[in-house]
Length: 409
Image 1 (spheres, rainbow, N blue to C red):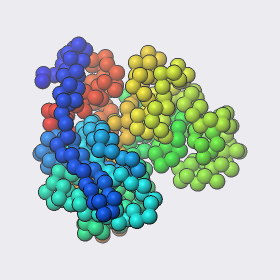
Image 2: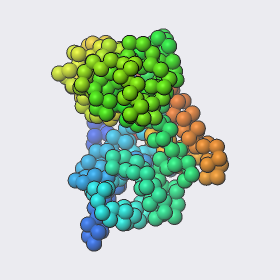
Image 3: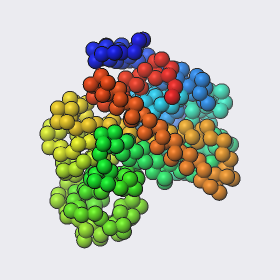
Image 4: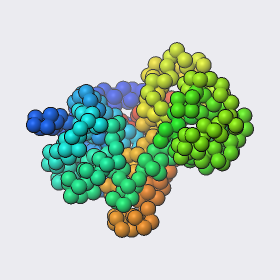
């Protein structure tokens, strides 16, 4: 496919790429069962050509979802999304997802989980398969890494591990949130904004939201509002908050933060979703999907939305945001720090002893996340400006072009 030179050619190419991608199915689709344990699980790998010449040849990667009612169709959808996310991140890595149809809190789950891992062995990349291995997703818990690595007798096929197991500890380090903050910082700098004069609001102060607060504040930006049910609603800050409150929010010290919020903030609503409509420069939706809809888009008062959660903006809002002059950086660009960390875990040559001593993999993951996301946002914004198309359309073009033409950064 020739590179476009006009907006019309851009959209013609994008439609061709979209049609080609939609016509493709997964490369691997496996249902894992053990009737004696009432075990049902799934592995789906969507695409691997993009990784053919990379450090993980013909490999796809994603996390492991655990919930009662999980279906093969859901895992297929998630693997497909991971292929776009990994390609948009500029990684030579295909997309995959695994999962177990079970309640992770149920009695005997450890035995079921270990059996699932054991039955997946033939498909694992370290054994010659195309499945990059297990990781954290909905329903996951820290002990799952221990169970998986113990069952495999190896730490090579589970990512997100603590440093003492050779991992990046990316959840504890908040590396996904680092990527979201880096996305916002990069686009503001491109638009000649000043970070020390930038105010931001966060919807959802869980692991992602807390990490965004941490890293975006380190860039010099000012937190002006938060919304979260554990803090009883939406809080507004008329001036810079204290380091004590900032630290409590970042570390999710709920009782301490609640006490300080009552002193330093103003509770403007008992609805945490109302933070979405606060006047701010950057809005970070970091909680749930589909919180920004066609109905409430007119209430938004922000210049940028940088998605920390998965799909917080519904599809119908994209043209409306554009009409309102709101710049959207989608989740598959902004929150790719987790899969970047997974890539580092799978490819770094740092041994466990050194990792324990220096946390080298975590630092590698942070550096790579900052660099990759900065480069990705810059390249996509250049594409957006060149063809006068929304950032999201340019993002999708880059991702699909990487997948279908096996491009590697």
